Length: 220
Image (cartoon, rainbow, N blue to C red; front, side):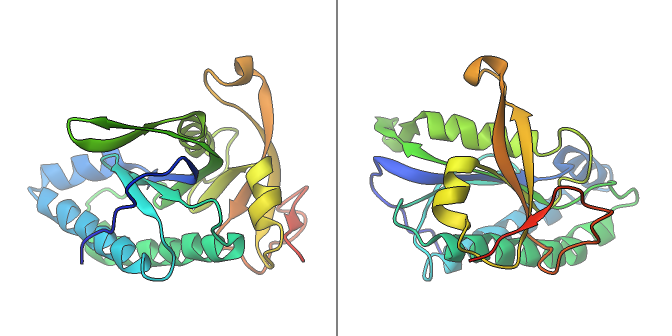
């Protein structure tokens, strides 16, 4: 199944994600002459995302080598988008273990996906007959995704979301554990720390309070 492309978007919810420890994974597979396994695994992810478009429209804007930047229409249902991220994380975890991890002699300490989410206007443009975009939301989503690992703790299967997107789209959802955090994003807001929300996509039941200070659970 191939991707369905949305021809032009002037505003979008931007979701940037990539694989943790992808360089270590590639090196480990290369040393064993097994790089084709990573190619096959990425193809499997592509087919999963293409199939998911039937239930939740989005533009698979750009493949980044170890992840994608996805563009969702601004009228996308927030809880449904969050469920999409969770389902994809669960699928990735299972498929990565069977298709990639079991073939590595040295397994990375951290595996999984990290997500960054922001919303904003985009400026469409055509470069070499390909639909491209520029816009602050693209920069912020990628910076958020990268900043998940800051200040310790495993970044795997976490989504770092701007507070404006969290309050507009995700606050009606139930069951997820959210960490209110502050992050400095490179070349954003003059280096000042911004308030955002880190969502644990795989933890619906919460954790002991002693293990997770300042946590809050999304509720209606």
